Image 1 (tube, rainbow, N blue to C red):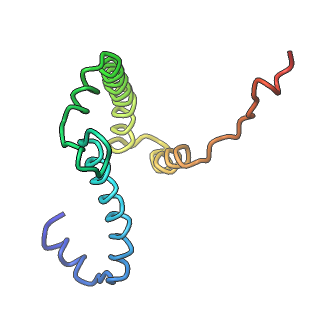
Image 2 (spheres, rainbow, N blue to C red):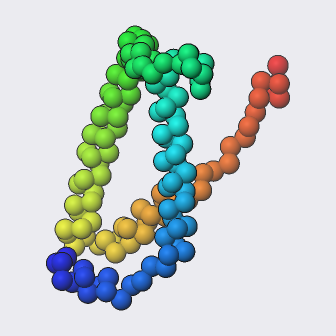
Length: 133
């Protein structure tokens, strides 16, 4: 889309300040919470007391733990594998739907959307106490 066409599309739209403030409020709350979490994470000692010092030792301690390194490696392997498998199946299907004239192409997008937007099926919540012995 060219810049002139985009400008002409956006020329008639006006966003009210109430709508912008409604959108900015949750973003500001989340930003403040992230800053507070970071501030607490770099302190050592009792929070808010004169004895508290600012240090990155907390991060050094967490990232030096072999368990955390193992979890990070497993997560990376899982993420790369899941992405490659999704690309292996999804990319050819997307290409076929968009670039060819296969029958049923017009219904492919609504069917995909219907599958991804359906609610999860209810499952029974059995506990150990409710299972027969």
